[in-house]
Length: 127
Image (cartoon, rainbow, N blue to C red; front, top):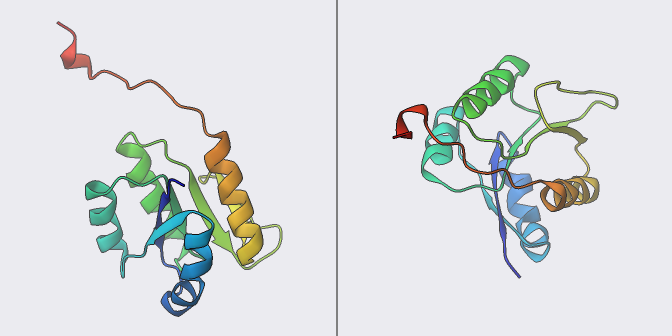
């Protein structure tokens, strides 16, 4: 089984530690940076299949982080986790309630349904 690599930003480290075996058995490798700055460094040097933004990150920081990721040209699925029913982050591909089973299900669906887009050539690459 191929593991999907997830960048989990702002997720509760003790909760992630306790759930890591469940994530691994579901086919996910979780990278959990300790700060937003570290998350951006990890994003630039890593090859992630999905970015997960935890509910503990303030709205403005989630929005800014999403903007920076999208400005890089990345179209990887970006998911926000919320504790409030009916919450929806318009800048994310999905907003998911903080329920582990549902979270794993929706992430699996997002990864299974994502379409492969051809690489876009840089305008200066045209000969």
